[in-house]
Length: 120
Image (tube, rainbow, N blue to C red):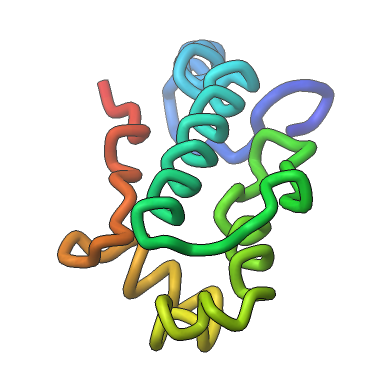
């Protein structure tokens, strides 16, 4: 963003206003915040399903719409030794948890991020 305009546009002979309108429609702060809330609740449900221990009051919620909700939740659940046994390999690092768990269709921790891709 520069002067409240998207500047990540590489296009030729295309009106940037059209692209900006599309971005505002599908990636507005309001929509991104809703997606954050959905992912936050969904990941806590996954934690509950697996019997993971956590204190929701201690989870730092994102202040910006482009921040991830998964990492603060992971940081909270990893504090509890009993969760290491439940998580197994996923307890080694957030990257492993995200790649092999949350992003893996065959994992019981899988979270469907594709529903948030707005291609129209």
